[in-house]
Amino acid sequence: MSLNVANIRKDFPILSRKVNGKPLVYFDNAATSQTPQQVIDCIVDYYSGYNANIHRGVHTLSQEATDKYEEARLKIQAHFNAKKSHEIIFTSGTTHGINLVANGFSSLLKKGDEIIVSALEHHSNIVPWQMLCERTGATLKVIPMNQDGELVMSEFDKLLSQNTKLVFVNHISNALGTINPIEAIIEKAHQVDAAVLIDGAQACPHIKPDVQALDVDFYVASAHKMCGPTGVGILYGKEKWLNLLPPYQGGGEMIAEVTFEKTTYADLPHKFEAGTPNICGGIAFGAAIDYMNAIGFDAIANYEHELLEYATEKLLAIDGLKIYGTSKHKTSVVSFNLEGIHPYDVGTILDKLGIAVRTGHHCAQPIMDFYKIPGTVRASFAFYNTKEEIDALVEGVKKAQMMLS
Amino acid sequence: MTIQEIQNEIIDEFSMFDDWEERYQYMIDLGKTLPLIDAQYKTDDFIIKGCQSKVWVHANLEADKVVFTADSDAIITKGIIAILIRVFSNQHPKDIIEANTDFIDEIGLKEHLSPTRANGLVSMIKQLKMYAVAYQTQLN
Image (cartoon, rainbow over all chains, first blue to last red):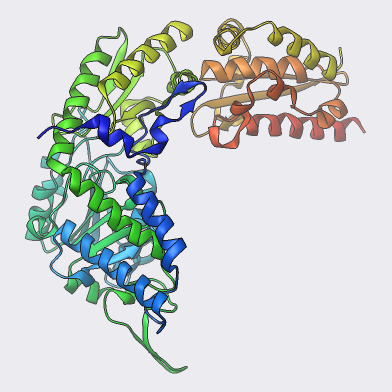
C-alpha cells in the first residue's frame, strides 16, 4: 500500500510555513515529529470543552476528562498489545520512564549485581544507570559497537552472567538509526533471569512494537516523536515487575489510604502516577496513535525506507561525504559529514536555506568518540517528507560544501 | 579606534552585502584566512565548551590594553570570533567591560549569539568580559 503524501502533508499546518524566506524542509523528525491537525484539534477540544482534574471529581467535566484519559490508555494498550491496561503507565516522556525503572531497581540490586547497557545509547540515558550503580554498588557493563554502528552481539554473550540483573538497550539508535536486535537481546537476557528495558523513543515513530510478542519486561516511549504533544510518554511494564517495584514519587493519585503512621499505595497504574498528570497530553497521545494507525505502520515503514534509500544514494554521490551508521537494519536517519567541514557549519548554511537538520553529537558522545568526530549532520525523515525535499537537502549540502571549502 | 567606532565600521562594511550568502561568505573567508591563536593556547585550559563547536580564548595585558586571541573548530564560529576580536582586542579593560554587542544584531548575525545555538560564543563573550574584569582589578 502506498501513501498519499500530498494529502498527508495537508494535515500538518506547520509544513506550509517558510523559514528564512524558503519553504520549510523539516528533517529533524528524530528530535521531535510535527503535529497533525487532528491532534491539534484534540488539544483544543480538551481545553475548550472538558478541561478538569481526573479520577476524583464527581462533576460531569471531571467524568468526561477521566473517561477520555482512560480511553487513551486503552488505545495505547491496544497499540503496544499490552496484556492489561494497568501495565501502561503515563509518564512525562521516555527519560521519566527510564528513571522510574532505574529508581525502582535501587531497592532490588546489591553489590556484585550487574547492569548491561549498549554503546549506542543517548548519553543522558546512561546517567540514570550510573546513578543506580552508585547507590547500589552494582556494576555497569557496556555492549560495544562496530564500524557500521551495530552492537557486537558476541560481546553481549560474554557480558551476560548470573550477576546480570538488568539489560537496557534502545530499540533504535537516535544518532545512527540502527535497529538493534532486541528480540535476541531479550531472549538471551531472560536465559539468565535478567529483566530487559527497551527505550523505544526512536522506534515508535516507525515500528509498532508488540510487547507480548517481544516478551519485553519494560518498554518506554514518548508521544512527541510520534505526532503527539511534548511532555507525555508511557512506560509499559509487565504486571509482575510493576508490582515488585516501589513507587517512584509520592503524592496524590498514588495512594489508597494515608495516616501519619502508614500509607497504603494505590493499585496499578496509579501507584506510579503521582500528582495531576498531563491529562490533555495523554488524551492527545491517544489521538496521535489513532492518526498513525489510520495511515498504517507498514505503509509508513515502506515509504520511509524508500526515502532512506533515495537520500543515501543521492548524498553518497557528493564527493567527500561520509555516512555514519551503515547497518542494513536502520530507520530513516542519515548521519553524515563533509570531509574537512564542521557539522555545525553545514547545519548553519542549511538553516539559511530553510532546511532543518540536527547537528552535533546528538547526545551520544560515546558514539562520536568511537568515530573520532565532533559530531554529525543528521537528517531524519518522516512519512510526510518527500523526495523533492531530499533533493533540496542535497542541493543545500552541495551549496554548503561550496561555500565552506 | 574606540570599540564603538570599530563597531560602526563593521556595520558599514556589512551594509554593503546584499544577502545572507554574501554576509556568510565574508565570515567564512575571515574564518579561513586569520590565524587567531597561538597553538600552545589551543588546549583544554583555554577551551570554552559549546555543545556543538569548541572555542579557545587567550588574553594578555599589554600596557593598559587587553590583547585577545581565540579560535574555533567551526569556521562560521571562527569568522564571528574574528569580528569579536577586532572589536574587543587592544582595548582598555574598562571599555571592554562597558561595551555591548548589539552590533551583532545589526549585521544580521544575532542568531549565532542565541544560547540555544550552543556554539560557545555566548560563553566566549562572557569570558572576554571576565578577563577584562580581572585585568581592570590588576590595573587599579
